Length: 374
Ligand SMILES: [Zn+2]
Image (cartoon, rainbow, N blue to C red; front, side, top):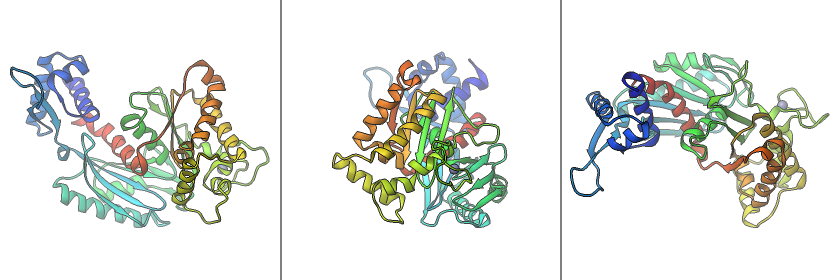
């Protein structure tokens, strides 16, 4: 491997794997040292990396560590959630250069959100001292990935909002828009507990229930971008009416409101209040009601059987549920007994990326294109 493919591979390796010596890069990428030297010299000349002697090592000439210069190429990563807005400047190598968090989330008026993101972009451009290479926005809705049209975002009251075009025009760079669950699986695949695994399901519950699915290394989108809307699998024949217009949806038995009822909490209960109640159950060595656990187990086993993942990562309120040891034991047992689980091990993990998971995923999706051009 030489030329542009080799440069792209080296750039991606430094971005994901962090600073390393030239010798380590040569070994990790199966390139010869003279090729790595030429590539690194070019990146230094382009102002993308710096080199400094490694601190460790024995006698002889110290080897040079190749370090990304984060501000040399950065992206704007936005989490436009129902209850908060976060706009971050993420440098290549994943360094957070600056970020702005707002208590007020994305509201019913898309134009207001576009204006706030454009203002944040101006502020962050000033702080970093250069312009972003791309923007990626996480939204709680169904998105047409080709042009960033938000088809429907029920919790924001949006239908057919051309968000990618509006933000792209306002900020002046390409804008990618993606569903928050899809960005969750991207984040877990690149920076979380599913690094290097190409078949991953990220299962997420907050206001709604959804999944991001990575199959053979590619995001599963479906013909209309609806793949992964597992909250709306029909699991209870004749069950109640769902906000999506269908009935018997899985979300009704395992989502935020079902959890509130399972924990005998009065209305209204925010996701963070439910999270705290679940932490109390975990600390007391308690268990969730059988009806809740059975519904969760049924859905997880259905998804595992359909998708055949190596790793399932639980995020949002599902992370809080799976931190209850009795719940983790029960779901582990159920998955182990289903068809796929009997063929090979399926690892179950609780996400460790916390609330910034969408920002992490948004930065990585934006960088997937930006790094190709560095
Ligand atoms: Zn539904």
